[in-house]
Image (cartoon, rainbow, N blue to C red; front, side, top):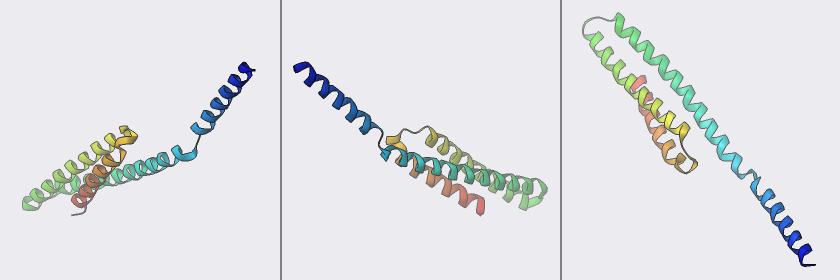
Length: 118
């Protein structure tokens, strides 16, 4: 009788753990994380394109205009590189640090966007 009771309790515990470990709660943050990463990668591609366009304009320009464009190109490239670095950190981030790193990445991407658009 005692063995039967112990076995039933053990099976109930295993069943409870199995059901508890497959909740849908874990899948939602991953989806949001994946969407955020995809959005940042798309923005980074656009930044790359704008930086290359600035570089081409700077190479063709002459005089004072060339100096201004080169400065803008270097600033834009630096901001883009900072955004890329934040994206890499975000991709490797653990779940407990995701929120903090995402805010930092958002700030870096906003700065890069401003530098490229100016």
